[in-house]
Image 1 (cartoon, rainbow, N blue to C red):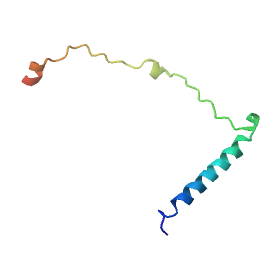
Image 2 (cartoon, rainbow, N blue to C red; image 1 turned 60 degrees about the horizontal axis):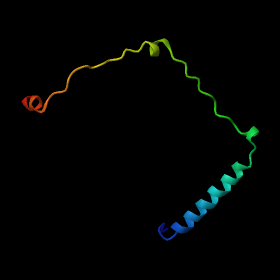
Image 3 (tube, one colour; image 1 turned 180 degrees about the vertical axis):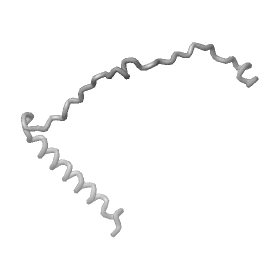
Image 4 (spheres, one colour; image 1 turned 30 degrees about the vertical axis):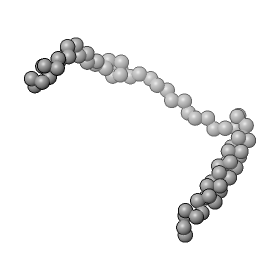
Length: 68
């Protein structure tokens, strides 16, 4: 089967299927839709006491870089 010859038919049929499913799911009332579970983000003790590293050094000049 040569897929290149049938690519237009494949594309059109995919659009028809996508269109039909979008209309089918749009008809569901908001009260009957399944809601995604709410994810609770609770900071643990380890996250609150996370160490932070601060680097306070000056940058090397071009001459110092070349010397390395």
